[in-house]
Image: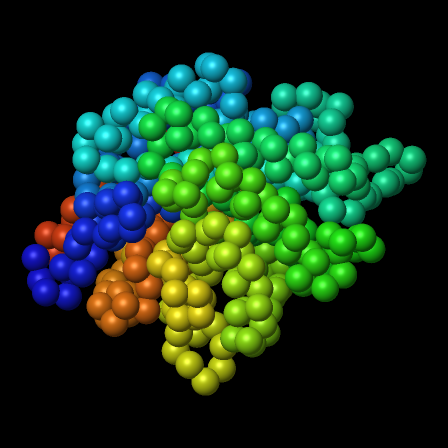
Length: 370
């Protein structure tokens, strides 16, 4: 193993969380859990990656126990005895291979459409409502609704700890519910949950505090956030390091241990005048460990194939720039998405210098759990 690659395979420790490598499997929706229950193929899907050098697995998005949390068919639940039993099998398989795993806890918010499981009559829930031709497409959340969703996240975190998960990740990115509160494009509220970014962050802060109370002081909480949204790739919550600092500090103080900083290309500087990416700035401002992500191991192509919108093929690429940034401690952990989805042995091939053996990514990879 070359000296430059060694940093990716060094252990990481934060409190009671000990990871064998710095490689993280990024959360990627797979739609292979009928009735929301992970089955044997899902167990094997995660086990293979833990066995092949992934230090921390962040599961695909798992819906919390709220009637409007889900937005897509066959995504797994993180509530109910059957689903939790399925996840317990995943946990045990990953641990048997020496890996660690956390669920990504998810509520899609206003992205949900009428007709979607589990109850087709339930509309999306969001910070602001939407009515068309007299039909409620998005229900504007009341304060009671907000507290119900917060309670659902807290319960999911409690259940994660009970079945042996190594922490939890709260999905606050990409235009889903928590991010919908952050973003002024989707949050038009005039109460204490709307207006300034500080007010728009109140929902997330209360939610993180509730999760922290549910799991205790030593249980890892990861928070994923992004500037970009699926609805608007150019969207930005903040424009300057000072604004980012003001946004992050209350989340950090509420109980976040690790920030998962979602960007579309990890090598793009976040602000003018510095080469730091979003994870780099977040680590510098908060002092908390960060996870970088965004086209790691691929050639920089768009990821529309992941959403089934193109037949493009993303070719493997070197990670020299990534390793240099990691060595300089710009960030602590590296999340790999599509490259690891299509090739469960990605980490081993990188470690052993077998880059020519890494598989390219195309939409065909989405058709099965390899």
